[in-house]
Length: 80
Image (cartoon, rainbow, N blue to C red; front, side):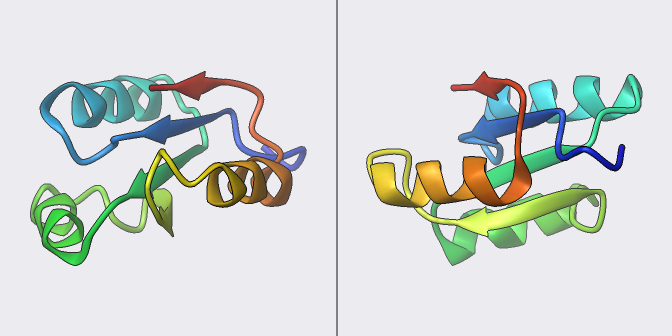
């Protein structure tokens, strides 16, 4: 998709968030994942989703970070 990401998933390393990411990827979506900390990033890597998802480090409470990710990646949907 050349027009930007299909979706940004806040909490993409959690139980539900990672399931949402896998489902979106299974449908060919371009996904941006907000990763809160390095430990979660390691878990994300273990599930081999890194490289398939554009990772943005930050917290969902950091509205500047979320808005920046939305602007940079031009995501059309947000999952939280």
